[in-house]
Length: 460
Ligand code: FES
Ligand SMILES: [Fe+2]
Image (cartoon, rainbow, N blue to C red; front, side, top):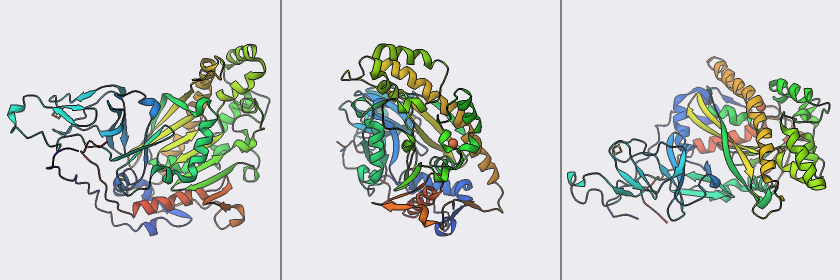
């Protein structure tokens, strides 16, 4: 806590555009303006990307004191840093002098950040350390904390995933995640030590609204149509029809794959029920990619019966866990959505690796991670392009002003297709129930008008 002259930070948000969100978001459809209107986008930057918990980074990206990782909270440039005392912070990457970004490297280690423009320097706690030639200012000018970096007042982690919010009234992160914690736990617990580390990424952008990607993240209806070429490729490499995404063929409505709506906008498409419960079953449904055979043969030669267990760790686990608004955990990846404008979005697919701190992989970690790299190349390179094309073509289609509605009514009016227990709604993976439900959470956030409280105080 610095001095007493500190003013609260003015964080007004844009003027509400005057739209009636009850009229724009109906039970079975939403208005095209949600995807095309710059005023609604501007409001999302405070009420969604500010008003609720937003994924920022993973702890493995800032493992040591002084490590930093650059990201965004909405459009705000952010440095996630583990400060010199080990406290994880989310600093605004914005010089308090004239506004330049102070950190221009994607990640690294730094005890301090010096603005490249006029050399103002900040400790990695966000506190102003000094300005060049201070005699040009009254002597107490910089002493009271007014020129510290702004920072996100609440930064919390759940099992390595770091989130931030500007909303002092948001619930604790664990409560916000609620039932979504369980699939996240299961996704992590299959790995040694119950954890993974983030590696490098496939980085893409599309000319479309960010919600198009979130709408698609639980969509089991599009797979056989949009990803036909990928399904054909999987089948060409294999006689076995059960590999990869093949389980979407035939009658997916009646299949065992379920979508679960978990509250607060989060949902989970669970495809694990197609799996036998035995070591090697997951590896058997993994698509075959050139270059994998040698690693598999070496693992089998060296590890014998244990190779099935090890190979399962290289295979993509058939889970899609979608944490509103921007964290999609799928296969062995995490995908992060970053809105850039009403009709442009960055989507980054981070690969993950296993770490073997206790020796339970018997020296196989590097081979498993080499295989994971191959299995994690497939979907971003051969599947995501299909999805991004759809998003761009939807954005183009939504330019037609007079055709106003986007329907998400598959399964609507058919309650027998759903079950509900402990606040979780479950239904066929081809139904759009998860969209209807997340749009309710979205509407609640967009109409809540929280008082955001970014701070210059160096707390903790
Ligand atoms: S803008 Fe950073 S020192 Fe001037
Ligand atoms: Fe897709």
